[in-house]
Figure: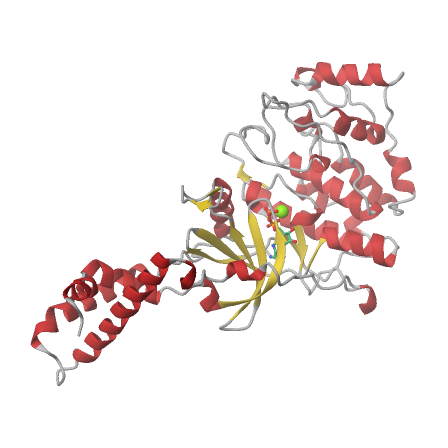
Length: 448
Ligand SMILES: Nc1ncnc2c1ncn2[C@@H]1O[C@H](COP(=O)(O)OP(=O)(O)O)[C@@H](O)[C@H]1O
Ligand SMILES: [Mg+2]
């Protein structure tokens, strides 16, 4: 027999509703088996997981809840997560990683993505560390082409990625390039603040366009094209082309002048001037840039890109594409569309749908490494760890048992008069739940 308190608890309609809702809501681990841990990034952890329904493998990105010391607080959903979800839900393209679903659970957000076995950084490491040989021109061309193709789609959808770099560009096991990590992406019609304005945003400066380094207040899609140039050069030479030392924010959080990064660029591309780049003189860091040129060296840097390319990108047309991705003036820099029309992509060998098509099986990069020690943090906290949670679980279990009793009781032959009202309210709640969904924001709208 239930005592009075338990009886009230069990019959509280709100509790019944919540219990029913929580019962119906599938937890991440109900739907996916966690196979292992992939990476800990800026905003959270990424896991490899297999769907329990169709056994398809996915990557699940778990955003960290806000944490102060050991106390997990819930101050809302992080801006980065909102952006990444909002943009990802609206897009669908073969060369952009697909978001399959979003699950909200225990103050954390889980984004479930299609799984990509490789990424550009891993391919670069594989060639520099294991094979000790360059990426072939055919593979280089296919990787660059598919990257530009995904980027054209994003740019046409008015999205600037802003964080293109080898670790964020994925490749599936069937050799299809997928642009990932839209955590810093923005819609172009929103006013764009400088990247470093505000807070904790950390972006590698090696891929940062010169207009950003010179403090431009307004910038556009051309920043992504610059990054593509840096990525293409890195694929060709297996090391970052402009590997500058980042100047850190000072104690007053003033944005520093990235002197070393600009020098690294000038060493290869020469110092820009007003003829190459109208409006250069008006950029906030122009005076700093001038000082850099004349105080640190006796003469202006000359453009030596052709020389740089000679030993690294043999076919002449590949070098020409790189030159045009690295045009200083953002308005003259190639667009993704123009880049895709470049002669290099029209001449043999043509870019392939499977970037690994021409690669012998024993030279294909190994599968993504996963570890297991981190995986348990995806599991639900054991009830024993928290008394409160144990109590909640108990009440939920009681309520669930009670509900199923009521359900059975709703059969005309076994119905007890005193319980009829509860059955009715359960029926209406259950209708409401079905109509409102189980709380999983699923991908509904897709463009294109
Ligand atoms: N869909 C995916 N499939 C496989 N691995 C992924 C996937 N998405 C991300 N990763 C791995 O996790 C890392 C971090 O993910 P990312 O989305 O870039 O988040 P962060 O904002 O933390 O950089 C990536 O560099 C990649 O190694
Ligand atoms: Mg990333």
